[in-house]
Image 1 (cartoon, rainbow, N blue to C red):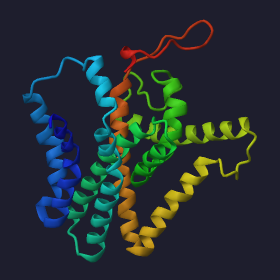
Image 2: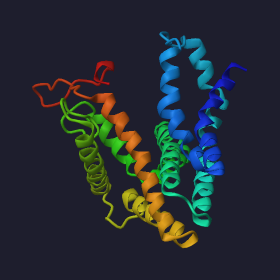
Image 3: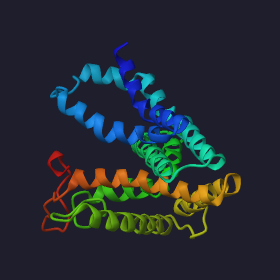
Image 4: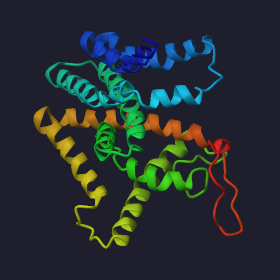
Length: 274
């Protein structure tokens, strides 16, 4: 029964649905709860200073309940997104309502989308990695899978890593640099993988090409099914989603650097580098 507390992970999409349903000031319910109420609660609540012991950790790793909690995010996120875009396309929204909805759905895409996608992207089963990639779609950040797994893990806390903020680099400068260079880095990694495995650019193994086509199809489908303005709203939602990721990236490695050895290689990543 204690594990049922993890169902609170679905509070964000629930708040989003409530906001979209009741509209008006309710549209800002999700941002208000996530950026004001939750941080205040965390300040008031006691901190957890210990980790699980190995026996309990092993038990929880084998508990399918936690896996199901992750998998359920796929139908939940796309259902909430569809509901929001549908309501927008058939109703007349005030400007402040549209902005509130964009931030609300963007928070869902970032927290229950990218956050869970990161975990599933490290799984061994290909179908779980597929679920992880699909969760990156609402944020238009499918290239994150390649850059994060093949780039960031090797280059974290080094000058070569797009997702590691430099000392004295402000958030906005980092956001602009990280968004651009993570995308170009993903393409560079993809071209290298194709070359090593002797595949052409138009090979079915070119995941970056697939991601581009899938994301383009996603926007076109929204445009044709709802409206092109709704598709533009979907782009804005995606920007909020991946911006939440970039804020986390900024905080995680800001100003931290791994020492470079005489060989040119960097020291092993440790806790002090994140």
